[in-house]
Amino acid sequence: MRATEMNIQATGIALTQSTLRDVTIRGVGFWGANKTFASAVNTSQRWVYGLFAPMGNFNAIITAQYVTRLIIEDCQIGGSGSNGLAMWNCTSAEVRNNDLQGNFLHAIYSIDGWATVIADNFVRDSQNGAIYVARTANGFDGTIVRANRVHNTGATWNTSAGQVFSSGWLGNAIYAFQAADMVIADNVCLNQTFSG
Image 1 (cartoon, rainbow, N blue to C red):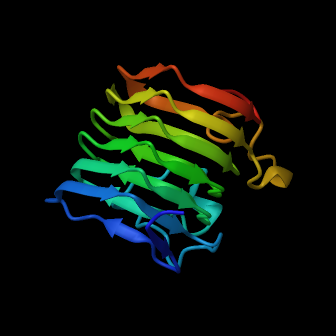
Image 2 (spheres, rainbow, N blue to C red):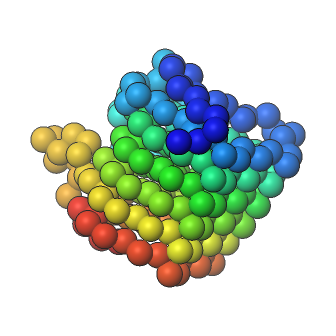
């Protein structure tokens, strides 16, 4: 149990000003109670992979956009009705030593980041994906995904409609799309629906 704990109701925490710098969230527990968010992200401002759009109120417990030097460490982030942590266009973000459990879509979702570090996290019981790093177009990303422990990643969303089929974006421990110059090393992945 962390010293500080927050129950996230309908909106999550949004860090979305284009001038935010040096933001640190440390040692806080966030629990979403597996509820859907009151509103989805504005896809005209934040890119959402097309197949995720119909998932209903695509959002995250912690959302960051255009933040430089974001640090999230020693936190518990769980029970999101969508993503645990979602970052768009963040520079030099560090996501370290967190416990991410039972998030519906992805535990960590990073789009168009630059020089992000995702390391030493314990990601477990993600219903559809654990760590997702992507770019809207092919290009340099430089994300380092290192020494994470990923356990039990499912692929449960809309399987009756045939939306999964090991396409990569669901059911995997670590997924990278159009993101060049990444380092993915020393991760331990166990019990993924498709691949680590």
